Image (cartoon, rainbow, N blue to C red; front, side, top):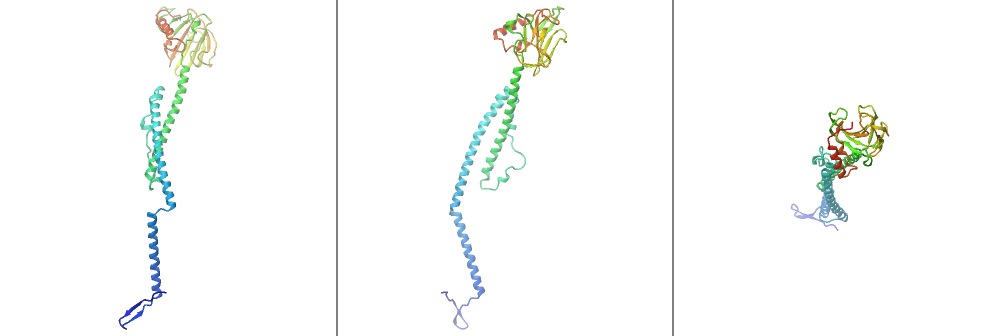
Length: 323
């Protein structure tokens, strides 16, 4: 039963019953409801701040797990960075030195990212700094891996070229040691057999019987096989690439034609005495970018140190050449 409230009327000197109008009752109801809602919201806020719900507990555990994995990820990226730096050092100090390539400067390997803020979309969160740092490190690591990958691609190409070059550069005697009578004349100033005047002898003369096999001293392509060069008679020229050309003169006959691709050790012709020659022999030259160089430096493929030393002594003797 609702309580009845009274007030004292000083005019009648009596207590009178308080009669609430409907509007007053409505106001009181509104105030009560607002107060209740405010109190309820306050209770919910307090509960949210200081008491974890089951769902909140799950979310907090997941957040801590993510933080742990981000820490492990950063540690793995640091370890990967250390391995990559070791590869970069070997790339610059070993591989690129061996293949005579310029080292890649650190400025190029570790260049940053310019322009607009790449990480703006990651800002504004509770753990933005952690996420941005991890993303930056991953981006830098990815760029360095890309630069290193391109460098290794270049090293592979250089290795292929190096292998091709080693197979192409003249490296053996053009006449087999078993078929060689003697090394008649070396590279340098010699007496001309016809004029007796001192003349620069731009190759080496190998004395052998007519018909002795002659071999290509390196991989290459036959660019001449004719007798249209003054003094050389029947001769062959092989372009080995990389600036090297070898010349084989005074042949009796050919075993190849112009345009033929040959490999080191292939039979290309036979010893003779055609052209300006005094006796059967092979005149052999090595040219580098058009300039004749001493062929004795290109026999490392089939001479022992003792044999090379003996040939060096014979080649250095000044006498008369055979052509």
